[in-house]
Image 1 (tube, helix red, strand yellow):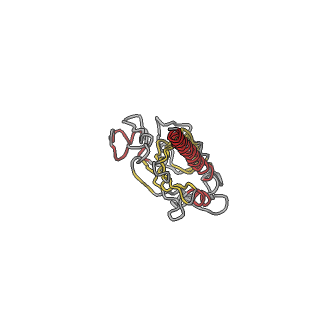
Image 2 (cartoon, one colour):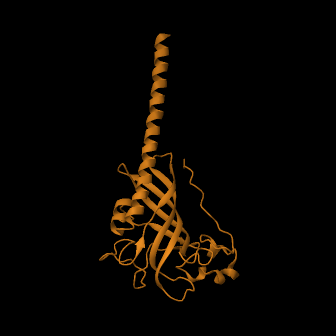
Image 3 (tube, rainbow, N blue to C red):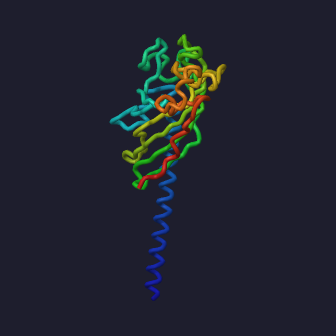
Length: 230
């Protein structure tokens, strides 16, 4: 009887120890994923190359989707000369450079580690001051403009050789609004469609208004925080 009691106690202790180890590992994984995202927010302001190398999985660096009004576009930033591909030379290795500013405060983080312990999902909101060449109201001239970026990261992660890396980055852009205009006047200064008078006839149009806020339609603040997968 005493031996059976001892065996039972040992089994219960082993179970408790395993649960504690799992909880510690889960907390460590969550913290590592959080820190990876915060490191990315710092790096894209100064060095795109390092952001790709340090944050993303090696076989698909920079894998991402930027949702512009419900339309997925390539992960590029505008050049000072109006081109589409980012420059990695001189002082323009990141979002901040010659005349440009890209500070990326990131918060409201929510991470779920999946049951396999090897994949995860995370969501963060961003409210960031930027200065880049865009097309402010009335949309007839591209010029260096100070504006707010408001958006949400909806990312996926994978553990490689004991380290977490980002396997998919999705940015949902809710607003890019000039300081002096505000999002009621111009919610997206990169896209001439998103000047309020141009949107009147597109009210509730999901193909154009899925992501960006505007005052004359429904704003879908999606997606919801991720749930862990089995």
